[in-house]
Image (cartoon, rainbow, N blue to C red; front, side, top):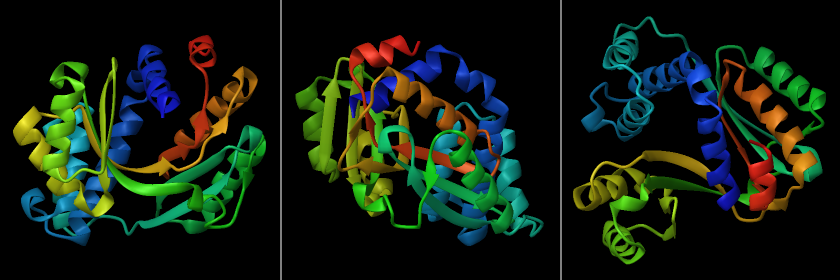
Length: 247
């Protein structure tokens, strides 16, 4: 969705990623530790760990931090985290999925519910909005990785399902279970990607005006500020004018 791409660009231009770098690294560390604890500590033998390490590196997380997170799992002193997904509605009825990793289910549920309420949203039951999304793998490349036809051919050969190309770059989608294989094949053809991760891709979207987008930004910011929250996804769609007005 164009809105999602612009949202990421606005975050970057505002310096929000730099401001939250420490918090981002903490969340990456948690994902790496859990992935290493659940499977093999060798990224080459553990697809989930490989993707977690790759995403951390793409966010410029230091190698020492990554190694320390893996060693924490191997050493047996890692906390026991539970992965819980929350679903709800934000401004204008936009669907919101909140992915968390917590060592205290009651604390996380209370905080997420309170955050929705304070920011004009409503926390729903599991499955209340999930049907509006598909779980997919997403690989992104800059525009200079190749023209649309070149990237499309590489994606087809790699086993991807869909490609969206624009002047901002290329976004390639695949089945969630194929992400490791598809991303590896794409790298052999196109080089290192900008981003490789699992996402919730909206199958239907909610149009947002400027006021609604401003409220949604506050909700997402508040949710992402919670240490237990790993990712937040919303099925918004907004015009270029609305997105530019947010800057």
